[in-house]
Image (cartoon, rainbow, N blue to C red; front, side, top):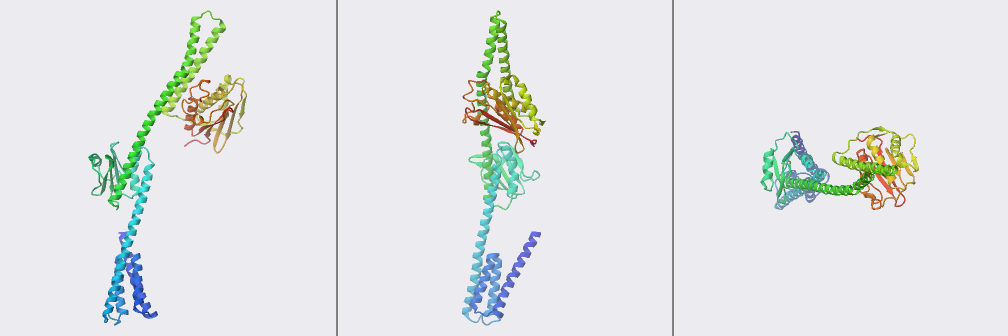
Length: 485
């Protein structure tokens, strides 16, 4: 109602203003500036043209008729009457009126084309925005749930409904709207017929992509052309097919990754677990088959069994740990801990293996306590220190450094071993990956660094490596000083 009142007031104002302008022009030529009738006619024609370019045809036609009457009354003899004495003036007056109306019509047509072009531009912008927002969703269920609300927001529609055949489910931008029930949307999608359909309150578009119908989209009337609604339906159909294709691709990739991991695990089991089992069996066979072995020899066999059993236990533990990380994810329970104390505890656990090595620690006093899961970060330190010991000569030093940089705690563990080839560094944190120069020289499963990366990622941190062949490697991991939200 208020909009209608504003429109009426605007129309009255425009008629009043145009009348005042032409009257002012007539008074100017009658009382102030005395010109010939040709100049008057051209001046009035310019005024009609200005009104026609700014306002609608009705205003321009009204002003043309008004100018014709005033031109005849005040400027064509006999002046002061509507009578035309000279027949040539009839031609002049007719040409003036015809020119005014023609110019008004041409201007109105141009204005309408401009409005149509502007409307098309706005529609294209909205379609682009709609497509960009659809691309933000890559899972089919999330896309289907969000699409009605996105369409209603972008195109200013009161209600939008979407039915997806692959999920056999319908989604509404307004659950309280009775736009179309699920049964009708399902029937339209299953009919396989293309083409937009007009309903009582809006339109329904089958989401056709090729010969397949992926669902149905219903929209309330929003003042757009049918082509616009078809374009919206086409974008939705493409987005749904894209999301479904991405899900299928993800499932295939996950299957391939599972096969690769199973192959790697079998290779690791064959290569790594068989070695300690062979050593244990050989020692046990020697003990059983040679009961007269000396005490020293028997103790040596016992030591082999003990050492290889520990190695076997560690390999199985890492495999179980990696499987747990893959299947259920990590449950991080952070509490404030001092990293210096944690490093010292891990070094104490590795005391026997560190015997004979120079250990250089650079941990400044006053480091802040860090929110971390104590047991998980202890595993990270254990894996990194064990790797530094295994992949460097026995008498070379190990360096451990801690510092805080930009709201993060950084811990560096450096060795002086053979280092890592540049081509292998991008894969060093992959599961079961082992360097080509080391896999036959040093025992291991290739799971330790993958476990460390998963733990640190769950904490909101990370890990990286810097290495030059022949100069050792520096592993750096970091943890945020503030808890991850």
